[in-house]
Amino acid sequence: MAIIKSKGKGKDRRWVLRYDGTPDVITGKRKQLQKTFKSQREAKEFLDQISFEKAGLVTSLSTKKTFLTTTPFKEYAKKWFEGEYFQNVRVNTFKIRRFYLEKHLVPFFGDKPLSSVTADDVKEFYKKLKVDGYATKTISSLHKFLSTLLQSAVDNGDLEINPMSGIKKKPKDPIRVAQPWSYNEIHQFLEVAEREAKDVMYDFVLSSGLRQGEVFALPWYNIDFERETVTVTQSVSYDANGVPELIPKGEGSHRTLSIPSYLVAKLEQHKRIQDMRKEQFGDHYQHDLNLVFPKTDGGFHNPNNIRRQLYGLMKKAKVRRITFHDLRHTHASMLIRSGAQPKIVQARLGHKDIETTFRYYAHLWPNADQEAVKVLEKMMAKERKS
Image (cartoon, rainbow, N blue to C red; front, top):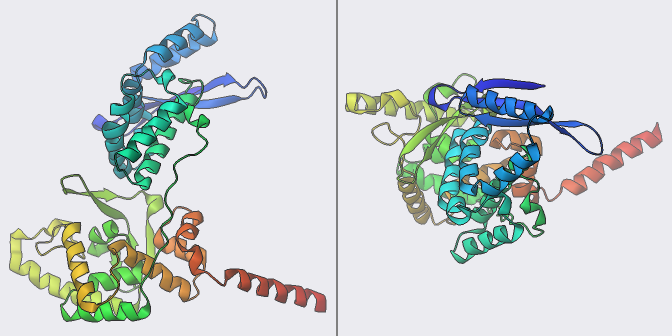
């Protein structure tokens, strides 16, 4: 069975073909495969080809062998990236991975045929990255991206074996243990920030745990003053030249969080001051963005300027120097110290899975094991009495 469906609009429109692969030699079951094309015609031509192959009208082995030995890595990777991969990731992820493809993978593997890529080639690629001074996290990200590419080639029947399977020691993300501020440090910092009228945004992050891009892109209509909630629906990312781009989140990534009453009052006052500034700027203010925390003219903040401001306030407050993202970690640590369960922390931070939450914050639940045993002990005692 085969189905052709279109995805996207305009120049980004692609045609996705889902079809049954060859039966497994052991189980006899067919695995459903997927390929993406730039036009419906290409999808139909490919479907006709595999239909002919199944009917014995085309020597598929010969065709496949020719394809594998002649298609350069860069050609296959580009076609896969702009087609199949484009359909399965967010816009921001697509942009980041495009940089990986053009900056690292294509220059290294280039004209080498796809079928000729070996585990040793991949190891050599990692070695070069390390020699060039790239961080462990960057190498790990490239490993995941390359693995996805090669596995897709296998799943689509374009490659017989994934060379990554021959690599036993794979790059892993470094685990950065969060070092949040204490309540004392939070108080010292906010006291100094308030004196300089720069406290609202930082207080907001400490009370909500939003990511930097989510804070910078937060519009006023996503704050419900009556219900005392904030809804996250978009973020902002910056290209290599620092140009901002608004990135809407998929509906599945939206989240609504409760915020403290005192913060709601702060935001109301913040809005009144901002409205006066809008009147002063008139048409020179970027009204269309309607941001809660914009720069003076209503546009997106420059992360570098905020970093300098943050470090300056920390120095004056005489607290440990941490990053903007560590303010989010501090929020998580306060939740945990207040007794919040892991699933609540996961939901507020917007983690895709609970494993991510535990990877960063498991050490902040030091008594979790003891508490679990105590609960179990009480239940056992209750059962014995009954």
